[in-house]
Length: 289
Image 1: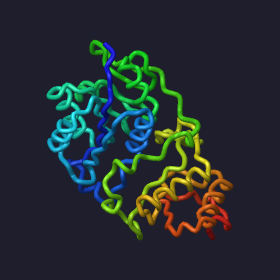
Image 2: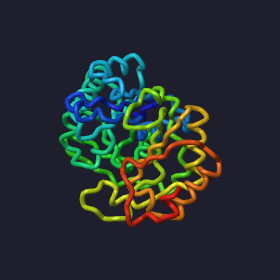
Image 3: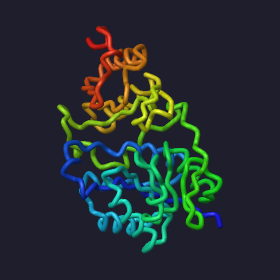
Image 4: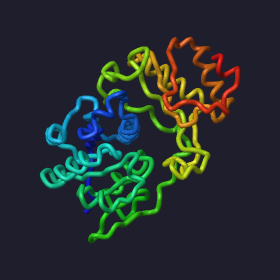
């Protein structure tokens, strides 16, 4: 039977068992914010729980989910939150009988054990925006949706991969209006509030250790990026942008154009690169800016 989904809750869990090593920096869950904005553009009602920021344990998250009563719960996970995510997902399935999907950086791994222990309906592998919408639009017809893994009679089914989003400019800006106030996010920044900025996805290289290696390098236009910066500065008072790209300066002309626009528009913001910059992809002109 086709399932009708109108309300979606997305959860960024708190790594309760690894919190000591995860407290240096807190960024807004930008991946969930991208997915939420995409779903909102399709007419869905969304809410985000940033349990990591407020250090909400699994029981607190469960109670918030129960109170909101969504049709679908999406939980992001990585290696530091696996156990917490397993409990949240199991509780939602067993006690509330809601649809549950998992995704995030660890979704690229072996799905069998995670699906069995979490009781989740499926795992979204790769970029979440289109795949999550396709799940909803199909009425959760798992066999018809690319980019997911699920269990069928105890057997792991991995569907063909969802095509990567090539036109990143087509995505709406992340749903910052669904997140806590940006001034609550603390890290090594020099000015607050800060906002993370993702100007590209994927990698042109084939590093065996990198989850982005097979996704191809795709990038937003300088105009689109600076438009988001203007929006965040005007509406959320952002004073510093942390660019989280793996290789911001891969295309030097593009990097120069972005900084030229920032200077031209006199945005008066700080820009940092927490992931670093490759020394072989810099030149004196760019460094001076």
